[in-house]
Amino acid sequence: MSQYQNEIKAVAAVKEQYGAPWGAINPESAARMRIQNRFKTGLDVAKYTAKIMREDMAAYDADSAKYTQSLGCWHGFVGQQKLISIKKHFGTTKRRYLYLSGWMVAALRSDFGPLPDQSMHEKTVVADLIEELYTFLRQADAREMGGLFRELDAAREAGDKAKEAAVQAKLDNFETHVVPIIADIDAGFGNEEATYLLAKKMIEAGACCLQIENQVADEKQCGHQDGKVTVPHANFHSKLRALRYAFLELGIDDGVIVARTDSLGAGLTKEIAVVREAGDSGDIYNGFLDVEEVTVADMQQGDVVIKRGDKIVRPKRLPSGLYQFRKGTGEDRCVFDCIEALKAGADLLWIETEKPHVGQIKGMVDRVREVIPNAKLVYNNSPSFNWTLNFRQQVFDAWKNEGKDVAAYDRANLMSAEYDSTELSIEADRRIQSFQRDGSRDAGIFHHLITLPTYHTTALSVDNLAKEYFGEQGMLGYVGGVQRKEIRQGIACVKHQNMAGSDIGDDHKEYFSGENALKASGKDNTMNQFGGGH
Image (cartoon, rainbow, N blue to C red):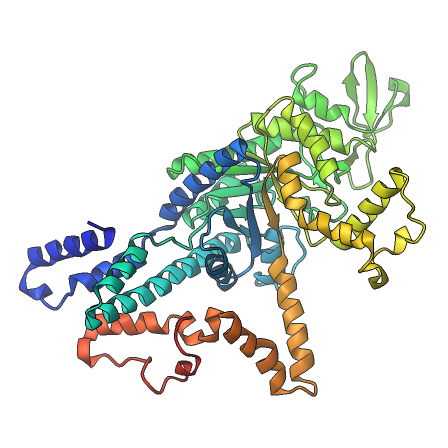
């Protein structure tokens, strides 16, 4: 017996138990509501999605072609539309996730208005957005199932047993829109207790995967801006453990932690690490500091010095009180961070780079894998990179090293549209197209994400609409540029009342009020102009 029939049977048993007062309750209607709301709490979501991520990680270990992807979200509707589109175009949500970007939360969701990516936004907004995303994804389930229920009723009314069986099979094999979210907790928004408390809120909202970075919480900067300040490993590992304890407390034993290192572009630290014995992680961390050897006579009032072997050295300290690392140590620090984070319980790594270069990423991951063979990355395919220019320059450099004639190209001006149809640009675009596949095969990238794609697509589409609508095109700017494309591409939102839940509400009214229900989907509903099937 199918889950659908089992639910009907279960509700019928409860109805019988309570007798006459429940006489108007239709067991099939209640069963429909139950399976439309499969996930009752955020913890249900977190348990379900953590299992998916763990299975996907194991599949990637066996076959690097099975990498995963996501796009960043700043609103539940955006996340919902992505998953509806994925199901429409690919037939399955497998290995497609959502990413919750701290940058977009800061820029788009704070009561303070747009903010830079510096952890100045209200930290509770992050957990609120996770809950919002899953609310919209669950509504996408309810909407799609509602359409199947109407198909089932129509088949029954027509006496079409074959159609009824086919719809029943769709219900029995229904694939939810609920997928894992990799959620950005920035640098933890405070000390390890603050990190733990926020992590609990995020997990309770549905997060199965939390990403945390090794910057100082109150000095946090966007990973692609200057002025980043890292913390010693002991500080960072305390926060990794805080995340794990939060997962374990809430029963998400397989929750996933992504440890992000910003050391490649971070030249500063706020603290000198505590050293308990020569060669420990604190000693190695301090070994990257830019120092000068001093004697007692050289020391000045307020100097901070450390002992290194049989020498006394003074770390170079800036007027801000921060200490600087030696130039050229970023990659070594990155590798060290990654190894130590995995030893401390992280599941995945994130290395923030200054450019998308498979060779650079592979060089660091290979070194990590010498110590921890199954190390895997989450990688930011960032809009902060000029992908066109970067890859054209990579091809230019590769060709030049191979002895190929590149005299026709100006390396500093390769972004120019005059190069768009050239052999070099075609090869660059081919490499951009294969970047994710190449990075997963060669550089250990398990998950590819774009942090803020919908920030950019919203700006681009609104710019185009405004230019047309407020210009000579007038209403045709909307009709030709938006609505006609929605209709012809089968975009569900062309029937926006349905997308907002109008038909779901009608179903409920009919359950609750029977023939007395005042429904919105009658003949005068203008959405009928768009026909069925969306």
